[in-house]
Image 1 (cartoon, helix red, strand yellow):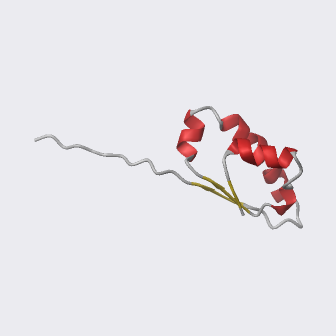
Image 2 (image 1 turned 90 degrees about the vertical axis):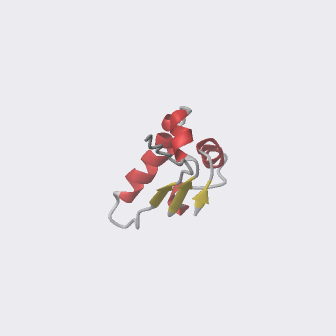
Length: 78
């Protein structure tokens, strides 16, 4: 299981501390904020190889969880 920011995950992959074949679960916290702040390209950069790996017949795939704590408040006026 990998939990981290896109930048940190990419850093670990580039440094050889983590390999795509070992990732079965990926959790991205504050996902909405990451996309709002322009991390979409970084996220796609490490999701693309995971998706390609999952297409292979002997691969078990991976699961991605995007987590956010954004609350939407609806105010009713009388």
